[in-house]
Figure 1 (cartoon, helix red, strand yellow):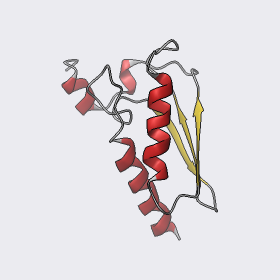
Figure 2: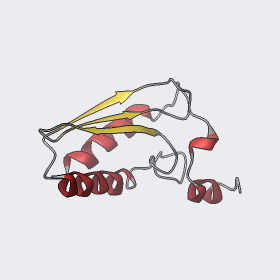
Figure 3: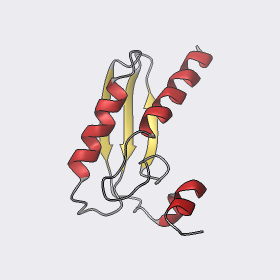
Length: 105
């Protein structure tokens, strides 16, 4: 079971890395927008995420894109997205790759 859960988590991360903010050339995972991935015993997935700013004009698009990407994983039964703004997003949440891509390193 632990191997199956790990495999599902790896698939989730892989799919999250296919979702991009249309205004930033970095995926939502490396951008640090994903605060949590929870998988229950029935393989329902809850993603806790944020945006770079509360007034992000692409928020609805990005949230829907994350949901669609994860729903494409056949083992997942249901996907719920929780959009939060606490703690506030900041550049330190980005991966080293994202910082390099955006010229912060």
